[in-house]
Length: 164
Image 1: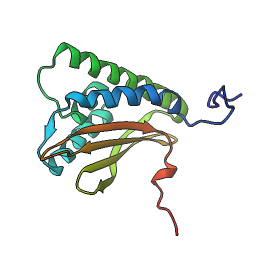
Image 2 (image 1 turned 30 degrees about the horizontal axis):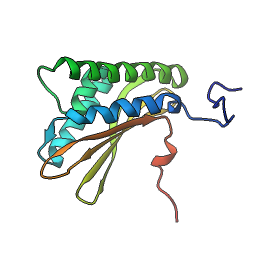
Image 3 (image 1 turned 90 degrees about the horizontal axis):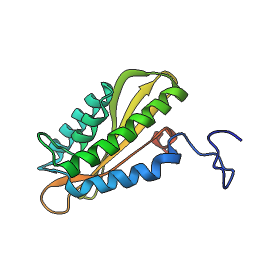
């Protein structure tokens, strides 16, 4: 059995899928205290800071950037930031073992908007043999935007345009 096969159902699973559920739980939990962003430009600026942090391999700064948090943090927030940044660091190590070292090139490849309430950014972090796909979503319940969701995978097939 391949290390990328689900033991219970014997179906192949892609790279990060095994730990994705716990990571998504942590990410969705984080959004309870996310700082608000005034507009879409501020969301894009948060993504720019996140890209820089992931390019440098700084998972903690990546988490702080997507959350739009600067300055001092409470103990509870610090624990949540640390848990997610450790998870991201662990997954980046596993990704490097499968796909080679990071090339130091990270880019925003897609921005999507659903109505005027959801905004999703897709970022690629290139490695020697593939790229990690990060999807970061923001939600605007009223006047301001807030971090909503983070996931990542090694499945780049979803990025290709669908042909009619």
